[in-house]
Length: 467
Image (cartoon, rainbow, N blue to C red; front, side):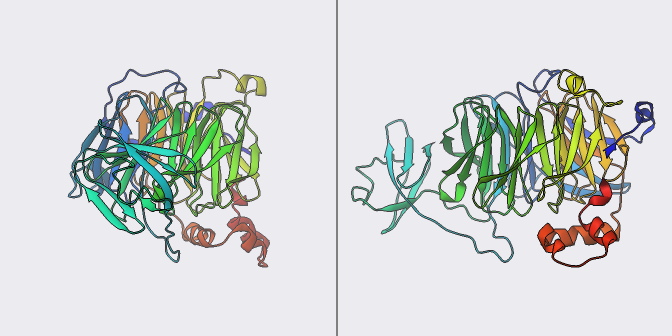
């Protein structure tokens, strides 16, 4: 069943409150397909990063404060690191922030590589894994340290070559260039050339390049399990999986999209990956084997954005056909459709320039709300199971959005490289929803089906009540 709402009632809906706006340096574009602006939030909520111009990324520490009128967000200085402006040297189309952590009950894996290393007089050091795929290169103007199987060796400010590395003349020596700990916050930037850059946010230092894509990188995402798995989506029609715990070694190339891959998202337990792009289907991948699990077919135009609910029970896909589809990802079942253009257009009109292209979708942390951005210059806030948006806001050039970890603030990135901070209407989750959220975080749909439950309770736990 599709959620519908008379178009004349949109103007009567409550309005989200704009808290503040940080302006960018680019001119707005009417269509966001050519240069995608992106933003990233640190996993611990310590900072926000976004592309402010063609080559620059701004990182601002911030925290959520509680004001007299309720929760508000203020940009503040942080004791961890100051505000940073990073020049990436070429146009930045995507970025992501990630840090290492060991999830509860899971032991972090460690792995070493066998590889070769070489350098030159310009300060470039490159390495290639002998037992894996991919390569990286880094310009070393600070300490270089390689952890060898026989011990460590370090030279300050010097460039190592394969001949001068202790023990590297012998085959079988193992090295691990980077040892990311729990305090390392990494910034990954995707460039128009197809290269990835990895930065240390705490120090502001450039760490390495990841090079294997043959076209521009449109989206980056780190896995939420803290294992520093990075997925890049590119115009070369592929996704590539990188293991940052293994010096950025490339793990897998994912093929299955007929055109550009525009966005990808991990499920909260990192068991599934959804990818969308130029085509009418969304792809679901099993992370353990990186095999294609299912294709989700319901849209009539390119699918450009996707996001999982916090419990992983619902997947939202946004398309240029003016709709957002809500799926049960395990069974690939369509639960509902949120329409931004009414009456619903014919498939032929929806597959063209309908002036209501939906560009972004994001779930709130409570799992019952989501935000969408469309070409009609409106941001809509939805509640699952309701026919109409619960609030709207005028946003010109909105291209991407993300809720903060507390869910009180919605951050919107615009086509001029700016950021807008919005305060959605206040909402207290029901006890039922909190219980469902907790249960679905720990129980899969197979677990639910293995238990005899009343029909009404089973329907509720499987989110069939939103259809």
